[in-house]
Structures are given as structure tokens and as C-alpha cells.
Length: 460
Image 1 (cartoon, rainbow, N blue to C red):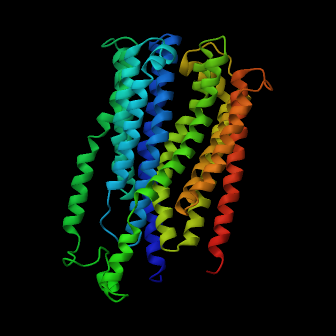
Image 2 (cartoon, helix red, strand yellow):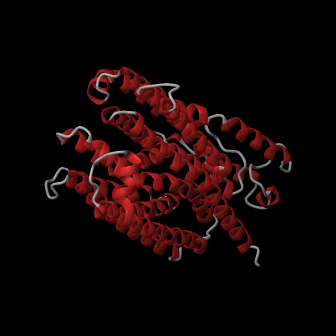
Image 3 (spheres, rainbow, N blue to C red):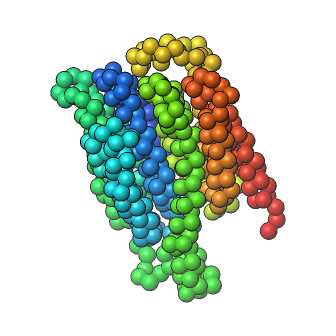
């Protein structure tokens, strides 16, 4: 094996190992999330369960839009600097951006308190309090996720999200066994979960301190890269220090990346939640929005599982891009998409065979689920997962703005479909629309990926 291929092999093994570790933790997380809503639908009446669904929807639309961009920013920035040999990573800019997002949310939430309490939570102020506390707490949780992903502490990342999901389920179990009662007790699990998950953070800091203590000592004043001799053999220590400073994340660069990724998160949340919100706003059946939410859980649970792959994929691809590992880059994307295709085909066939029976038993509802509509959700889930992998390749190649255009186009097409009367049944309309919108998204991101791959193959 050549010297140049050795790092690529180690990176591939690290990515594969990290994805496997995260998959175990987040697979359990997805199952626990599904269990939370299934139990909630049994211990609460349909209207209370719908309020819990709306609380979750509002909170996770918000945190995905304002916090996941910082998770991605941290993961990409730290991974890129680690691949280039740097061992120190400034967190000042990400902390400032994350704090600004959290403060903006808090100001808006206070200003809109009346609207949220009266028109979203049916005058249940306790649900509003859970929304505010939980959303602010997730600022720290998502920052920790990005830091863990960038350092490739995948076991700790998996432990964080698993602990979050487990603590949430404990609250609904307390209601189920009679230790607590009511929708507020169930909702408290959503607000408390991010706070409980932060127990993992001290362990991560202890591991980082141990790594830095065991690392070879660098002479005082030497450039902040691992191969000091190679740096000194270059244009001189002063030039290297200037290059290092240039690579530091600026507020302008960080804010631009965060805002572009935030627009991607907005589009993704539209794909996952526009159907629930439009049905809730237009249907005469107040419980029908809960049915649509349950149907889309078929996509949500695997998407949560796929966060394991996305979390490990972005720093892996960023490192490959920084070290010109283009063949390994393409191989990682190809293997991921093929695995997604096999998984989506299996899920869709299962839904076609037993989907209606399983959904009725899981959620205790008398609604008649269409097996073909459920299978369409399974197919759309596959397109959505593939789009997530292709999106990570775009972020690693600094194509975030073009990727955002693809996501926003698909999201707007989905909203237009949901408010049109082309399909009379609103649940079936949501199922077919989700499959179609995600197919469009996957095709446009595929075209973007091929364009980026072609550009990398051209001589400088």
C-alpha cells in the first residue's frame, strides 16, 4: 500500500466504523421516538395527542432550522481543519451565531405568546412553556452534536441522542403506568430530553483532554499543525501562520454557511410538516392532521436513523475533499445511496403487505390506511434519504447555495400540491405529494453531484 492510499484507507475505516456505531444508537433512538408517539396516542385522547404532535412539529421545525446549520458548520469546519493537520479549533464564531439564533427565537416566542397559546395549543399555556424551554435547551444539544461529529466521537454522539430519546419516553411511560397523568406530563418529556442529554458533554471533554495530554508536545510558538517539520520546510513559519489564520472561520463565512443551510433545513421541514399543517388548517376533521403526522412518521423514523450516516458522512467527505481523495469520495456516496435504495425497497414492500394493519395497531385509530399510499411514503423516504447523502456531498464541496435551490424548489412544489384539489383525499394527497417532491429533490441533487464531480476531474 502506498503512503497516499493509507490515509484514505484509515479514513474509510473510520467512516464505516463511525456510521455503524451511530447507526446502533440512532436506530434505537428512532424506535424510541416511534414508541413515544405510539404510547401517547394510547394514553391521551385524539385531541390531546394532536396537540403533542403539533408541539413536536413546531419545536422540531424550529430547532432544525436554527440549530442544525451550526451542527453542520461545526462538523464541517472541525473535520476540515483536522484533515489539514490543525489541532486547535476556535468556537467563538459558532457560539456567537448559535447564541444569536437562540436569542432571536426567544424574542419572537415572547412576542407571539398569545398567538401560540390561543391558536396552536388551544389555550394550554403549559405546552407553550415546554416549547420555549425545550427549544432554548436544544441550542446546547445541537452545538454539542456538531462538536462531537467534527471530532468523530461517534459513540458519544450516539449516546447523546439515545439518552435524549430514552428520557422522553420515560415521561409517557409514567403516564401509562399511572405515576402521572395528562398531556402536560407527556409533553414535559419533549422539553426535558435535551437537558438530560447534556450529561454526555463532560465525558466528551474528558476524552478530549486525555487526547491532548497524550498527543506529542509541539514547541511553543510553532505553527498549529501536526507536522511541524513540514511546515518549517515551506515558505517559513510566518507564512504558515498567515495561512492558518486565513483558514480560521470568520463571522461572515460562518453566517453565510449557516443561513444557506438554514434554508435547506426550512425546505426539509416543509417536506415533513407542510402536509400536517395544511390538513390541520383546512380539514373539518380535527383528528385528521394527527393521522397525516402518523403516516409521515414512517419517513421520520428512518430519517432520524439516517442522521447517523449523515453525521459521519459530512466530516468524512470534508476530509476527503481537503486531501483530494476524490475516488474514495465517490465510493462513499455510491455505497451509501445503494444501501438506501435496498432499505427503501424493503420498507415499501413491507408497507404494501402489512402497512394498514400495523398502523392501526400502533396508533389505535379506526382510520382506514391506504396500502398504496403507505408504500408511496416508503418510496419517498428512500428519495429523501438519498437526497440527504447527496446534500452532504454538496456541503463538503462548498456547493451549499446550489443545494439550497434544489431543496427550496422541491418544498415549494410540495406546498403547491398540498393546497391543490387534484387528489380529493388529504391523506392520500400527502402521501403521493411527498413521494413526488422527494423524487424531484433527489434528481436535482444528483445533477448537482455529477456537476461537482465533473468539475473536480478537470485540470486546474
